[in-house]
Structure formats: C-alpha cells, structure tokens
Image (tube, rainbow, N blue to C red):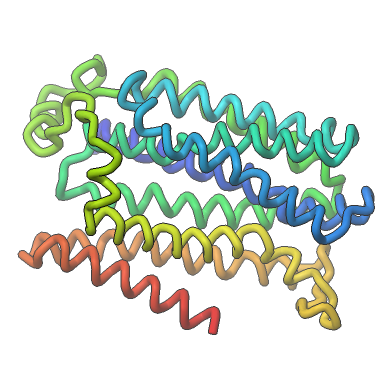
Amino acid sequence: MIIPYRFKIIFLSFLAVFICYIDRVNISVAIIPMQEQFGWSESQVGIILGSFYFGYMITMIVGGYLADRYGGKKVLGYALLIWSFFTIITPFFSYQGLWWLILIRILMGLGEGVTFPSWHAIYARWIPFEERTRAVGFTNSGIAAGTLFGYAVAALIIANYSWEWVFYTFGALGFFWYFFWNTTVTSFPESNKNLSKNELELIQSEAPAKTSASSIPFLKLIQNKPFMAITVATFCNNWSLYTFLSYLPKYVNAPVSQGGMGIDLGSNAFIYSIVIPCLVAMIALILGGFLADNLIKKGYEVIKVRKTVNSIGFFGSAFSYI
C-alpha cells in the first residue's frame, strides 16, 4: 500500500503541533516544584504562565504573512528550532531570576506563534478541499495529544529525576523533528521531487491555492461580520483552553482548603486527573473532523456544518465548566 505523500505532510504537521504543546504545557507541571524551590507567590506564578502569550499573540498575527512570503516550511521549521532552544535553556535562566524566566517564556511564545498559520498555509496548497476538515482535525488533535503527553511525562520525569530534565528532554525532541521536516516537506507541491504525477494532478485540481494570498485591507476585515464572528468564537475558545492548559495541574495538586483537589504530584491519581480530559479532547477533535467531512459529502451546506460542529463543541465546553 502506497501512502499518499500529502499524508506525510499532515503527520509531520501533527508532530509540530504536538511538540508545540508539550513545550508549552511542561511548565504548568514543572511550576509546582519550581514555585516551592524559588519561593514565588501565586501572582508571580501567574505572570510566568501568562508571559508566554505576550509573545505568542504577536507572531500569531504576522505568522500567516511570513508563511506566505517565505514559505510555511521555512517559517515553521525555523520557529520550532527557536522555541526548542529556549525550552532547553529554561532551567538555566530560571536560576538567574524571575524576570529572566519571564523573558524566555515571551521568546518561546514568539517562536510558537507562527505554528498554526504556517501549517494552514501549507495545507491550503497541499490538501484537497474534501480532505481538509479531516486533515485540520487530525493536526489539531496534536493539541490534546501534546498536552496529554506533556502533562503525564513531565510528572513522571519530575517524580523520578528533577524538573530541569523536563525542559531538556522536551526541547531535544524539536531538533529531532526538524531533520524529517526539512528533508520531507516543501511549501508547494509543485516543487516536491518525490511527489507522484497522479497525486500532483489531484492536488492541483482540488487544492487550488497555488500562489500567495492577496493583501486584504484591515478595515474591511473588521467590518466583515463572518470574520468577526469567527474571531469572537476563537477568543472564547482560547480563553477556556489556555486557562485549562495553564492551571489544570496546579488545580489538581492544590490543597482542598485552597479550592484544589489535593492530589500529590507523584501519584498515579495526579496523572490520571490531568490526562483523561486531554484524551477525551483528542478523540473529539478527530471524530469532529470526520463528522464534518461526511456531512459535507452527503450534500449538507458547508457553512451549516461548520456552525453545527462548532456549536456542539462550545456547548459541551460550557456545560463542563458549569
């Protein structure tokens, strides 16, 4: 059985998201012994956990432009190397002082911010329209898979070694990934020498985004109701998601008297409590993509399918918080 070349692109993009999230959430577990060791207050911990998103927000905005101009392969590849490097040196700068650690977290955010715009730019040129929802769903499942792995393995490393090794091991994975990304992926299918003629013809006929996107005036964007609806939906989703990612381990570990669950960091119960929600999310992401694609194939209107699947996810999230 010959695996379509575009599936390799999808898998490596999934791994990029996976690594993005293990490097993002590892500090959510490591912060527990780090806070005890360095004597940080809860406010200082909040600044550390939140500082990442100052950098992330900046490059998330310009990531699409960079991917269109320089190619999604280069932008994502170099960015992952950069944030992997900052992950590895996190322990060193933690010992230098609080503000040094905050600076490193901001720089990590700058690196990770281009992740999603970059692989979306690649998919626009590589993935046929009817496969795109499944491809995006599978790639986005790297969020849950990376969070699951990051939480569980970070807890095990801390219990058996020390919190510093969480950053060393997770950061090293990015350099390993880059070798395969650099030798396999191209920003455009037309420039890939290993792509079969039949697959190239399929991609060219069903994934027509062959060139860079034309510029769109910002004022027109913010006046566009569908765009603003998507923006608000994304804001609401990310508010819930990033709060969950940052504080779930501390909530599970915090004493019951402080509103937490009081579960010890080194126990199996701690790992189960932080892993199960991520496992459910990963399954839901993949199933959601297949559900949407099947409904579209059956003739349902694309916009209605997107709204329905999105609403199911939002209502489920809201209900769980209540």
